[in-house]
Length: 139
Ligand SMILES: [Zn+2]
Image (cartoon, rainbow, N blue to C red; front, side):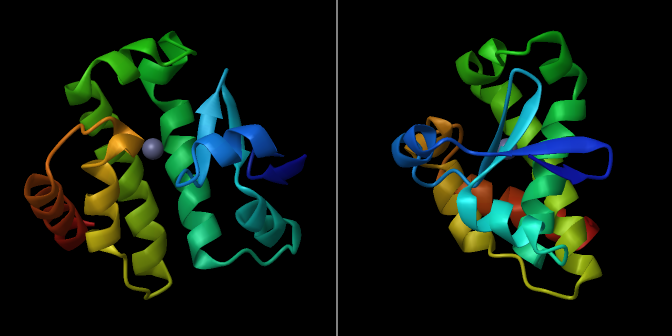
């Protein structure tokens, strides 16, 4: 277990990492988990931008009133509007890290992910791309 700000960060169990093979991090039962490469990057003490981005992303989920009230995030998975709202908030936190480090955020990749099984098709690719482009400008 590692520390980041006031949070304890755990390594994502291999079984979860295998099933959700595109997931970089997650919040479960009010705990933050990071996939191995990002967990290891954090362990170096000088985490890369991606790792810092994922950390801020998961912290935003953890601190969300919605996630606090529903630690299993049932509504998140049942309601695609809530899912999209929560993801947008988390991605904005992630984008702030990229802007701070003057790095490019891969909007195409994220739009693909948002419109895939990863997020249970919470939106279509074009809408996701438009939403993410707008968010990137305003971050
Ligand atoms: Zn997320």
